[in-house]
Amino acid sequence: MKIVVAITGASGSIYGLRMLQKLRLRGGVEIHLVMSRSGERTLHIETGMRAADLKALADFHYPFEDIGCRLASGSFLTDGMVVAPCSIHTMSAIAAGISDNLVVRAADVTLKERRRLVLMVRETPFHLGHLRTMVALSEMGAILAPPIPAFYHQPKEILDLVDHSVDRVLDLLGCPSADAKRWDAPGRGIPPA
Image 1 (spheres, rainbow, N blue to C red):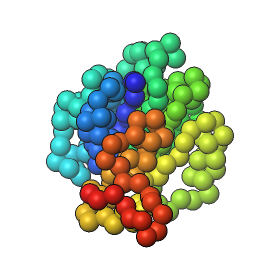
Image 2 (cartoon, one colour):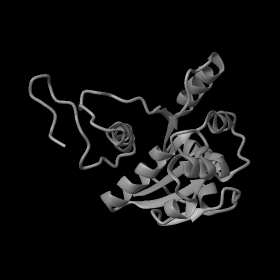
Image 3 (cartoon, one colour):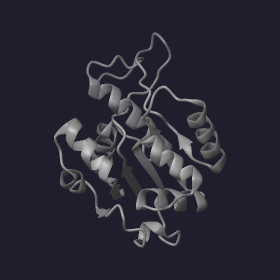
Image 4 (spheres, rainbow, N blue to C red):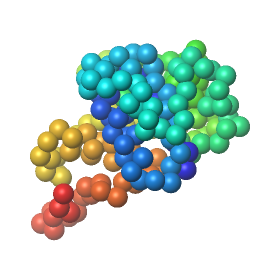
């Protein structure tokens, strides 16, 4: 499989980091990474990591401005793309088709080629403009998956909450994580950690 991972400037860079780590652990996935400048800055603020740390987890990485690279063409076959986290700015640009950077252009290509595009929109609360933009994106074929935690898996630490959202997105991309906590009927339990 070939998966494009984009990281933008919304808070929650840990989602992009964990996505890369879990895809790398899974194996059999060729990872293509694009980070916005804001994404690089937020990553450093929130984790102390630099873009180079994330690039080391990808098979290929591309400059944010490189709208002429292979990710910008529908002839380059990928199996899907995730934007984790996805800023409102990026979400809005994708919806409007404003392809002035590689994150938005790659997302636009993913949509036009009818491939899976998952947006982990990281904002709250949403106003009506955000919601209308999400409806438009859903109508275009995007999957909106804000990282909203569940608690049935009895999380013990923040990473448990992060991983739950990342695992759900990996399912949507067709790359399920072997260690994902899955719902089981009440009384029958959740697999132990």
